[in-house]
Amino acid sequence: MSGPPEPSPDPVGLAVLRARDVGGAQVTFFELFFDLVFVFAITQLSHRLLEHLTVRGALETLLLLLAVWWAWMYTCWTTNWFDPDNPTVRLMLVGVMIAGLLMTATLPAAFGDRGLWFAASYVALQGGRTLFVTIVTRSHPLGPNFQRILFWIIVPGALWIAGAFIDDPTRRGLVWLLAIGLEYLAPWHGYATPILGRSSTADWDIDGEHMAERCRLFIIIALGESVLVTGATLSDLTLNAQTVTAFVVAFATAVALWWIYFDHTAGVAAERIVSAEDPGRLARSAYTFIHIVMVAGIIVSAVADEMTIAHPTGHVSTGLIAVALGGPALFIAGHALFKRVVFGHFTRARLVAILALAALAPAAHFMNPLTLSVASTVIVVALALWDVRSYQANRTTATAIPTQRDPADPLHDKPEFQPPSLGDPTH
Image (cartoon, rainbow, N blue to C red; front, side):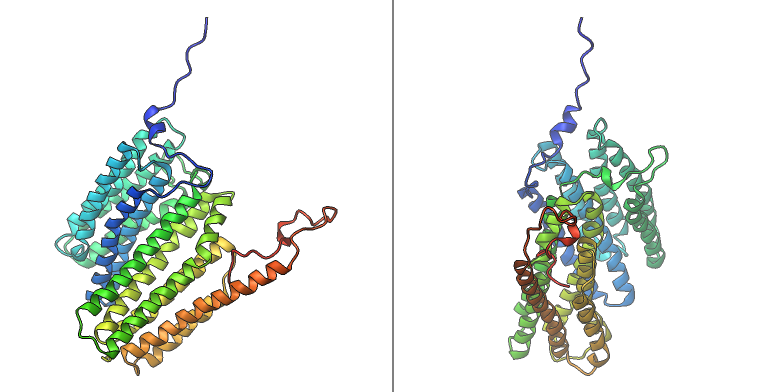
């Protein structure tokens, strides 16, 4: 007699999981469609900061950005594991999009009379998606990970809802800050959960190329919003030499930021995560946490661009100085951290650029907005050109060094004696 049949894997769980291709999973058209919700979100956050350009307004906008980024990033991790072209997964993502649109629509008044709508839509988005993947992976090795994540969605979710019932914006913000803080700390302690224990990054079996591509696309979304702001602002104004110059300078800044991120670093960083021994750890640090700093820098820069194009020869306020210099500084600092995590060191050129932006602050009060914008852009463009020069120098050096070593050499297999990598373009 034959023994009892072996239990078959959960057919639903296997059906919705994404196939792992040798070259990495491709970003699907539905994922790009999903991102349209967050194009709207970036625009809303930019406009909110422009309308509330105070310390309090900036802190509130930052808290909302953290929530928007977390909603997008968790969905990014989800589609790294689950196939967006599967009808069941696609329907789940449609539900996430509906909740995301409602959340985005309520962003401007989240600290006002729409706080409950914002909190409820955010919690529904995070909780509904996580509950779905927890159910379909209940018999899959990934299941315990999602069960822990669900716990760390429910606990902060209660705080989001509770905070929405507080009328005072400051107290509401403090409760929401606690909620988002718990969510952001959870990956660092492995979603430590009673009874279930904790996960390790080695358990987060991800497709590194897909993760890198999704984050690159989000940077494009943020830069696209910046370009949209410059064009939309100019279209409502009477054209003259000052407004057109401000428009060109703003666009030059967007190009320079794109160049710094995409020209060499982004592609080779993707190769690093693909070949990493623990891609989950690199995805958590370099992509999940650090990319939001660059996104914030782009949003803040877009606010400065809109203010400068609207009033190129007007008065330079403290708020304008903060966004005109702080936006590029945030982006450059985020990119420096990204390179530190991926390549293992900081680059002096980025530190010099940040110090140069800071040095402009005392003199900024004696400039007009256009002059300040030009000065800031010169620093960012100079950094982009430095990257090009440094990459070309490294490429020449690497070409000149032999790549073959004598197999009899005892240092032959030591990775630290390999030729310089073309993937780390600046030093």
